[in-house]
Image (tube, rainbow, N blue to C red; front, side):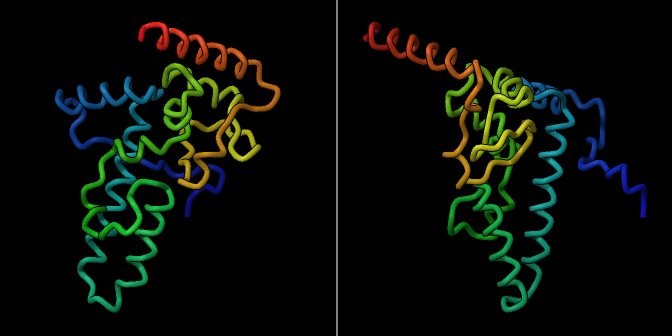
Length: 179
């Protein structure tokens, strides 16, 4: 069974540790998404492999057996925003690590303009400046559902919110002046 207080690791390490091409691609993802370490990339990669394995498993069934499970898996991936509504089971096999990394709270905060860089977005989340539906979430790896995307904002008493608003206003003013 295992120790209840110690959970299992949620990722698989790469099969060959010193593959230069893989290391370069991981370093690009690390800087693009402002991740802490490569373990976060490996977790996303493990998730992609899990979804692909489940899709291949379902493709081996007959139509009537797989219908309910297929809808369940596709519905889950559509809810988290990884796949569009009405996607086919074969689309799951084309998922990439970046598809998963785009749905993390840290990335969504950066894309919404609540932070200037992905690293700053991570810091805001960890330090408790970001709320989701009025609740503080301090885990940058939280997978944001499609419905929850609009409910992300700053904590009501966060001093950072004013600074970012001023920064965005100045940036907009500079863009208007350049035109």
